[in-house]
Length: 543
Image (cartoon, rainbow, N blue to C red):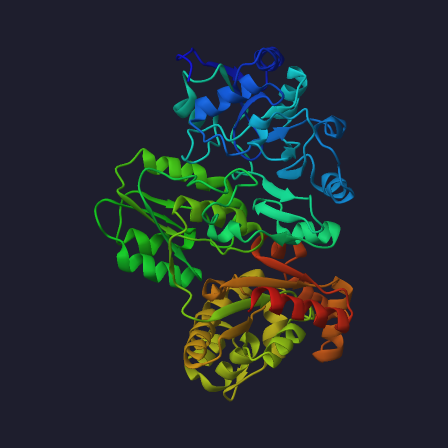
């Protein structure tokens, strides 16, 4: 590495600072730049000596390939021997954005940039400051994360300065990163797009855009001995704080239980979900940080690296961490946590797979559940359990009658009268849920524990509101057009059109399910199509 230099701190909102960064890069210097994923350590991707300075500044092994960043599609053709049709389709769908496409490189890409591979990863960042700097430099930029190799990636300019002050010419401050984990890396040199590194663009999103997608096995296990990395982050221990991580994988309720059994040492740090904080803080009063709610994959990815760096500012000697569910948008965060923990984790799944399925009334949840029942799954319907309880649980029935006078007559609940009250009154719904959710969840837990079935399906309309999602290994929403739901409710439930509409109005929209659920299944109204999608789900996620 060259001698220490003064590192300029430039402002991403100032045109003159953008121009200054561009001049430094054009002259062969290394400049840290913001992107929507993490900060990148940028240099002219076509200049071997400039690229070498990246490796020197990071202390990065030179068999670890770099990603080349461009600001426009027309800049790609000179960098590759072929821009395949599937790559163009993905570029149109997801660029600018957190996606890298691995293609066969042209002779313009130096071997040092590609770590000797015949391929190169290319991405067009969404951050406007990153694209403005590429334009100002006039060259494509190689830009791995702007951290010392092996440490957590930086998501603020202050993080970059902690690692890179004196090592690079400048750091451009573009504010905190919106995504928080590095881009999804997709190999498009074969027939089916293959994820080499998961991120915000998920396998399911890729398959929806181009018809199919797969994930390289090394993503979940690390590279085998002698296996050469095809993308950044595949080979070496990455993203690790100073303290070792003990990673707990499985349903959030189970990982909390296992974590609290080990927590309590004065040197512990804890990385847990928001809903776990009260239980954890009874054992640990310091160095406890929240990733966000267990369902909030966006918060997990946005917070992860900043929190791992925060532990480095403490005296934690080990970090006990709850792991998000490794599906959909959670795959990227889980991949980084597994790497930080050296692919060692505590399995808290208990030998069973529990699927939580939710969605609006009439979405097709019962069809999904029935098909998995044919495959040997234990199916537990929260509404059916609720009906059992209001018949057999005198305490719960009395509580409902006390809160909603007149709906219980001679020990029998008038469900239609209760529905008329709660579907149009948000506070009434909350009060009813406070009475029923805990008991329904307890019965579900008892029946899962008592069953020998290796797969359990929980049909729960209020999966997240009830907290029953925390029992699940994976959560799924069945989505259906609103009019289809309405017709099914009318034909099935002996209600008036007004009551059907009130029921739907009281239920979440599709965006709610997209944000909360690990996976989505789109029911377009054809039973045959829904059955086909359900069987595909079983083959992929339940075996």
